[in-house]
Image (cartoon, rainbow, N blue to C red):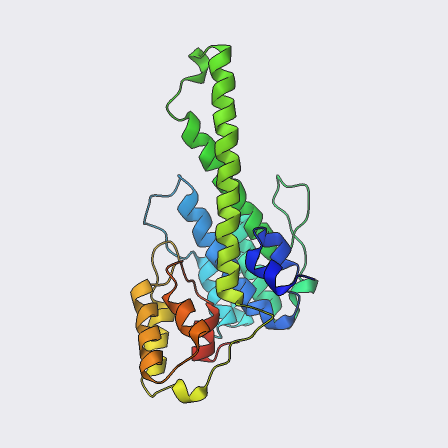
Length: 266
């Protein structure tokens, strides 16, 4: 088991996922996978920048864990799920298992055709994003070169640059995914102390707007999230962890632990 300090400093998302085996994390992990799906599409150069929207798979997974869809609707998607990327199918699998009351520790393992190991849905999503980041970094280094016409020493130098770029991209992507996990899960060692007296009549509308509106890459609108922090402060919220988290400049996604507390979501 991790300590609180190790959780705060971890840069390996799969190690963090090992700690999240309780059923109460099912919805959270589904939304984390959904964020990974947005991230994968955003990183992949095959998709036009800024034109990412939720697919039928990720949209259904999100609606399912938020109570806006039912398992009975799954039959409508099964015929087309085979065409979705493995990481998007993983989001649906996680949502289905959560609705069936299966804890993450017992979620079935799955694999993509080119991966030798079988992974649980959140692990599969993480590995997909990391591999896309690695591939895009390698392509970026070699994009302006005609390797067929390069001399051997130049090819070796290019290979070294590509390797360094891949390693840097993987480190950065893992760091980013760890941030997303902390945004969604929060601090499992120190739950948020939230006073229901801070919830004024108009607070829920502000929180719903912050939860609903997001960018093409799946990140919540920072202006809306900031408005929620201001509204909470005006209502008497004095918890630094709550206000600081909402005003943090790093991206927030659906499932943000503070936003979920305000909305009363598990």
